[in-house]
Image (cartoon, rainbow, N blue to C red):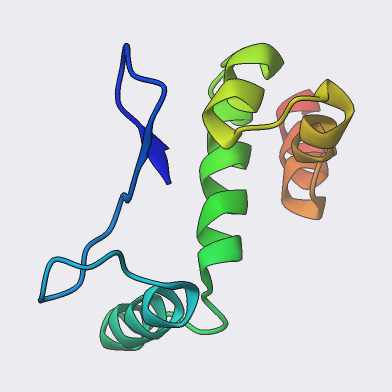
Length: 97
């Protein structure tokens, strides 16, 4: 559930055709459907969330802001997105010349 600014009540972020909140299975179905249409493999809501967080970190967004966007209360939970991938390490070596 998303929160609108200045409100304490949680509102659904995604709604179905009848205006009801979209459940976990509905969201998974839609992500898989559109990932398939885009030619993406192994795409899930979790991989989208992880990619979003990693790109924020790579863009220099502070860990505190990333944690807030992900709804993490503990920064240690968010730190997993700062672990460099193999591509990150290869890019660092390449930049070194």
